[in-house]
Image 1 (cartoon, rainbow, N blue to C red):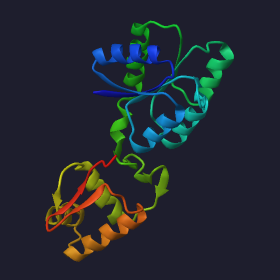
Image 2 (image 1 turned 135 degrees about the vertical axis):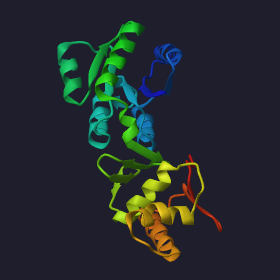
Image 3 (image 1 turned 30 degrees about the vertical axis):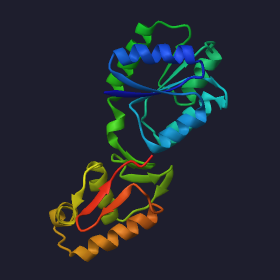
Image 4 (image 1 turned 90 degrees about the horizontal axis):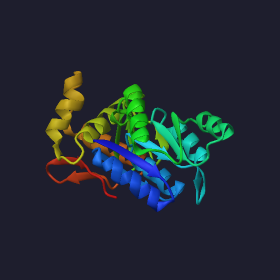
Length: 223
């Protein structure tokens, strides 16, 4: 399913777009301010962003630039009443992939979204997220609430395995097998305990990384 974040303070327009796209099997979340969307993007990466220019707490070009810096390949479409050439050029310079001017036809917006996703694919697949911790699998980077975190190879592989199994309890034996044994490094259980402790310290003791006593660990969203 295509997951779309939409920043729009006109609730009539927002709800109309949401209703239309959900009939096309999108999952649409509306944000009434740029700050709300920015916070959501720190926690999770959707498939696509629709962004109005004029919002109660600022202009969409600033958030567009932030997205380009922090979620580089995330597709962005401006959907705005500002339609003169200066605004359109500014929108693209701030990092937008497309620009749709209000008023618009739903069919045209849908076609532009489909065309953009044909070019980009589902970029969200390269990201794994859990309560503000985000792994960019292509770049092999980790961030926690937009702060980039430097991990050792073992710490990264451990977090990657837990994130790929988010919502599942994985046993200590399975983790040792998949993270260490599979790479030819045979270690004891104490190594896992120490690595988890270091990982938690670097990620500021995240509540989403849970210890399942006498079994193993589980990553799960907590907010």
